[in-house]
Image 1 (cartoon, rainbow, N blue to C red):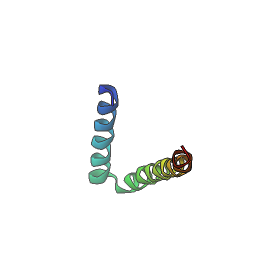
Image 2 (image 1 turned 135 degrees about the horizontal axis):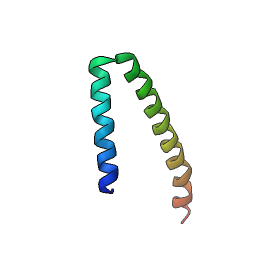
Image 3 (image 1 turned 90 degrees about the vertical axis):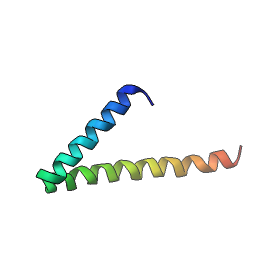
Image 4 (image 1 turned 135 degrees about the vertical axis):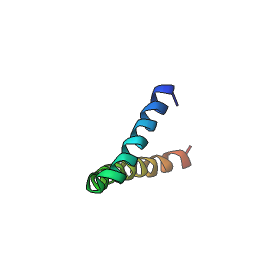
Length: 55
C-alpha cells in the first residue's frame, strides 16, 4: 500500500468520525456506499476463487 493510499484512508476515517459526531444521516449514506463497495469486492473474490481452485 502506498503512502498516498494510507493518507487517503486516514482522510476517510477522519471524515467518517466528523460525520458520526456532526451529521449521522450523512454517515449512514457514506456507510451504505462502503457496504456496496465491500459487496462488490466480495463478489469479485468469490468469482476468482473457483479459478484458483482449478489451477
